[in-house]
Length: 218
Image (tube, rainbow, N blue to C red; front, side):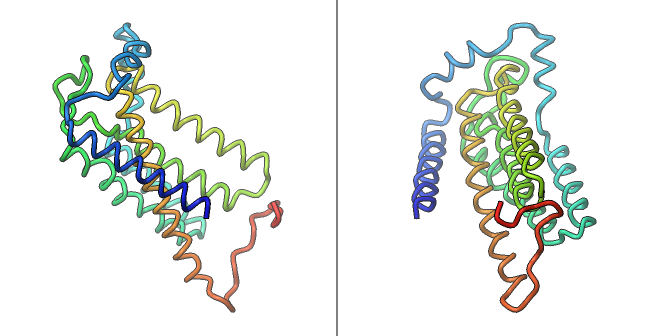
């Protein structure tokens, strides 16, 4: 019950943030200019370095397809299909909002572009890597290895958002909006995956066994 209430509150906050961004359009949120000024590096070389950690559409598509193929070859067919569902989820959470929110990019290499909110990199990282964190929790047996992989993926998600600020190519609220949209889409995909898994393993059918080394009670 608490989880459902928490998700409902988080969803309401996400909708509120996106609605405010759409209604006020080019207006920035409180703290955007101050935080970006404090974090953005002035050196052009370093700006270009951090800007390389951008998740382009082709990169995102390629990554999802490769992971899905690996899951399929690893006999995790349901998980492979679920991972492919991230593609339409990305379309809804990244491309669709940008139709209504025409926020200008910060001063710099992408200045003049009106696709700042939400940050695609932040959204993609939470959704694509977040689902991997979930799958690792489901199928990786040894506890230390499982936690280590999940923490590493979490660090990558955080750094990708920070790097967009260091490069000066997004406002802080763009990153927050991307993280929130990605998290909501992730919750939806995990919910759908669990529903499909229940259908796949109905009563009387063999259920998937824990991975080698995994403690069923862990």
